[in-house]
Amino acid sequence: MKLKVILEPSDEGGFTAIVPSLPGCISEGDNREEALANIREAIELYLEPVDDDLAVVLGAEQFEVAV
Image (cartoon, rainbow, N blue to C red; front, top):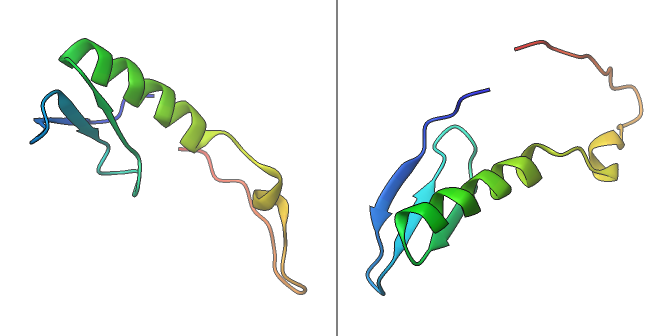
């Protein structure tokens, strides 16, 4: 899977990495390489299923969708 990442200089120094297609998926690094490595890890954690994802409201239906 390939995702677009926006890498911008941070006011405090270093870089901020943002994934527009994953709201709230943001990371930082002291340099470009570190910021990109950190955002890769953030993406993996963002996409990792957690127990809360399995909570279903009474009467709701669950589907799987391939992308």
